[in-house]
Length: 166
Image 1 (cartoon, rainbow, N blue to C red):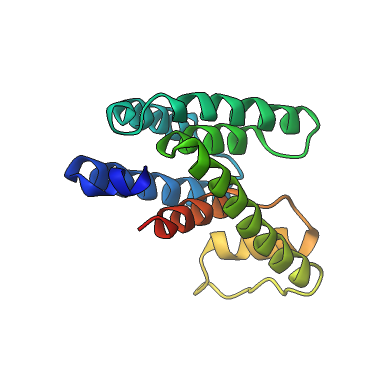
Image 2 (image 1 turned 135 degrees about the vertical axis):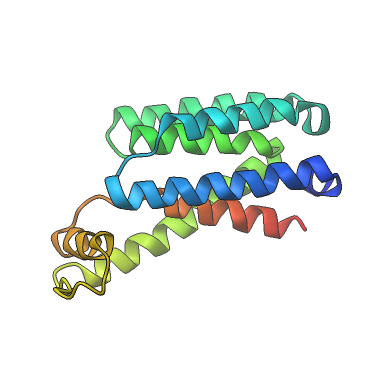
């Protein structure tokens, strides 16, 4: 179904918009460890716009994904913004592709976690002004074992899933 999404001009615009939204989500997650709700809302609108192309099955799959990840949020295993972003962005995939999407997010998030763990306690915080404040703060967070900016894994999983279906 994603190949059908990429065949039309509207579909390409939706995919490009989704990638830009995910980039912004990753940047804000790195800077503030928060994903704005309007980004998830924009994904819901994009998903609804693509119902004629993708069908309603993706909406049902997205609702199931939200319920599963909501339980993970209740168990404090994942952040609320991550839950909303994963469920909302999954609306752009068919149910079988949604499974691949979740798998790709898990792999990308695992790599991100491995990098953060490898540098925990070892990374020096740069004191120079040539590094931006966000870089210095992120180095400090990595050093101290702060929560991951999981929007990076979500964005990577999205791009991987789109690329897999080209």
